[in-house]
Length: 474
Picture (cartoon, one colour):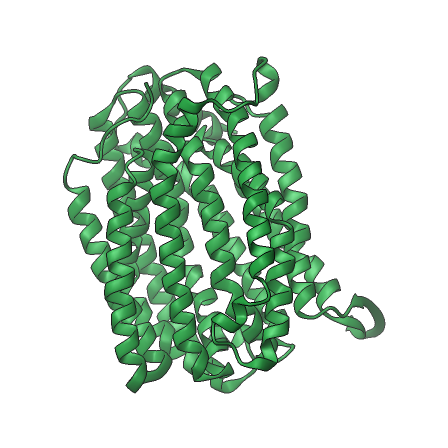
């Protein structure tokens, strides 16, 4: 309770224009980052367990899920980008102590984002059958891949509500509730998967045999488990936002859920570059999946599991990036540009240090990480080799992740969009297409490591300028 009070006190100092020492800035950074880091790492641990469950079904089922993973990430990222346009405005309005306007922005965001998610879900359902074919999947895994993706798309509106509510709470400085609920979602995902993926079976518990019920849905069960967990958490997250949030609960005043053109225009100014960038980045990842797919199920499974394993390393960076968006948004909303710049460098250097340590652990324990997800020796060996080359790029990957969060908090999204697109489409795709011919999957991951180092360096150079510090509220 004391740490929570201290965090709220320091956020008030930002809004009131009071000074914060360097130590207080560092303390506030970690107070906001730690819950998000723990939630992200917990999510990846649960994804490990999720992947391990699917992995026990065999390489083909693992490949069908892995094939659609990047596309699911594409749709989730578009939803997040769309919500971010409103969340940044809310953070800056709170920094300017315009809480009533911030709550009105929350109402409008719920309406606009929910309508957008319905359109996106319809598009996904249309694409679920032809998409595996376009990705170059082998014929025998296309059916399960389509089922997995289509099931996921049915629940997109609920994922959108979760994203809106959690992003609004984070913009107010409340990292704890979204983090706790996201950890709960991971636990529910594993529980649902346990009963939905596998058939009814006999298991040994403390030396006694007992019948464990199961639906035996396989790949569809994996999708339904994730979807059901997302539905439960979306409802809980929306309840807290609407009825419990200190700054943003909608019961504090009356307002309209009808969007205004002014707020929508500002939101699109922020979110459109983010959305376009995410689409193009994920499209590039899909192209890379298409490059990997002809290498066979072993390479496809190793690539999918390797991405899951690597996420344990970079999730800490995304946690700090979430905190950065809040701190930068509120600091700029309060008109405190010197404090904004100080927060930016504290966050970036902290993230690079943490992800550097995580990279060392990933390098050392790469075979064990892969072994947790697959019993196939060829998948484990290939995935471990890929993880070890990727580990060298993690500190600069941290710089890119966190700087992007900083720029998002400032509403400065056009230049980062350009940086990411050039880096991904020219550097990574170009090198992947060349190196896969002689080095296979290992060449694709080597190209990824080179590209991440390039991207992080460019971001650090741009952060050194002051052109990104501006506000988007009137």
